[in-house]
Each structure stands twice: as C-alpha cells, then as structure tokens.
Length: 102
Image 1: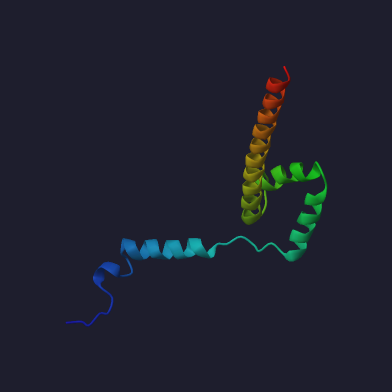
Image 2: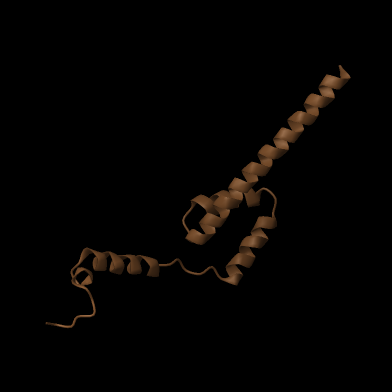
C-alpha cells in the first residue's frame, strides 16, 4: 500500500486542483500601482472648476487603471447623491417661501 499524503480526489488531474491553479493565476494578475506623482497630478487637475467634472467622467469610463476607474465611479455616485440632496433642499425651501408669501 502506497503512503500518499494527498488524497486521490485532490491529485494533479482533479477538477479541484485545476480550479485552484486557475484561481491562483487570476489573483496574481493585478493592475499596476498608481504612483504618487500620478495621484498628485490627478489631484491638481481636480482643483480646476468644470475641468474636474469632465475629468471625473473620463477617468471613470475611459481606459486606464481599474483602481482609478473604480475611485472615480464612486466619486461620481457620491456627487450624484449630494446633488440630489441639494436639489431636494432647494425645492423644499422655495416651496416654503412661495407658500408663505402668497
């Protein structure tokens, strides 16, 4: 009887082993790290009015680093939430002003 420490179901040709190798290969493929210089340039460009809104859409939906894309997609979602909140406040304030004056 052979003393094999690995059960036969987890041998080289088993589906579990193939899946494990595939998942390890997938996890090793990572996006390049965004350098500090690139973040500094991005932050500098985000200070400029109107340009920042255009760049948020370009960075979020254009080609580029997936981490940067995810960051700007999240930033656009937050901007939409804040804009909706401000619009709600403005509508409520104008509604209150016009109902009390007339």
